[in-house]
Image (spheres, rainbow, N blue to C red):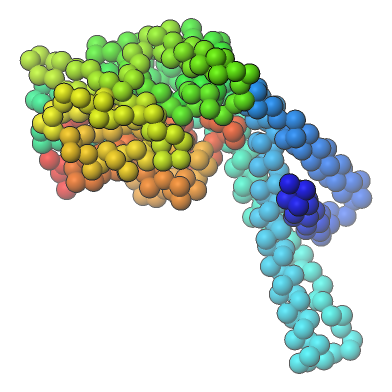
Length: 411
């Protein structure tokens, strides 16, 4: 532990030295430089104090959210800056070696002088993540987007041609800090006027009482003609906290399950329901959390007991790794799986329809949007709320509207 702390301290000191050098090439006022140093020191103290006083019995708090946001907003840009400046130092060193051994010039110093232009470039590049992260924690985390997706199935029952699904995921109510924005998002969901509303887990960060201030807000969600259904996510099991007893943990879990009833969602726990329209039906299957990295309480076989591969099935499973590992190969043929969980890491680059990138793609093969395998689909919602990092950059909070269509997709 001490060794790791020393390594981190050395790296942060190196980052601060390079950042200060960059500022000194552009700012000559000692007062401004001292003010910069003081702000950096105070930020360090606050961040490390918060980290070392993190209480696993309490979990994430507004203070820990702010500390992580501050850490990323201030120090990711400095890391970019340091990378550029360090690169210049490598070039300066090699130039000095060449000058000394190949073109020896006694009139010049070993290291060429640092170029002001490079410092300006470094500061310019560092401004990009700084402004992006600043936007992410002030505006981006509530910049809700509606994503529309049409999916075609040859065996979709005729009565469900044009059936619409509003899909939300990862509410993480314990992170909210703006009632006006959440009310706006609820209104946006209602405006979609879909036939059914589905929620794929993580109603809280860890504790049931996180949702209590928001129950009235989420009770404003209009109940569509075919109902509101939900499943659990990995955060709904209280697994990331230290509990006083197993009884307290179990009580919290029961309270979290009851939250779904309180906001008028039917919670599916490894079970299915049949959605009937006219004289036809589709089957909604809901499993508990199954994740390659975060536990496997979900049981798709139990949830689909009595169903056949001919039934048209929509599976709700929080973690998309479930689809990749099991569902897409399952003999019962789950036509569409709805997931969330990844949040798209809340950080990335996305140009809808053309390009998307996030660190999430190095952990999950399916991490945002729609994916297909032999006519079976999974849609991964980018998440409604936020967790850990209190913001979103590039990957915005999502409300998905899926329209089911009968037939083959046009090329």
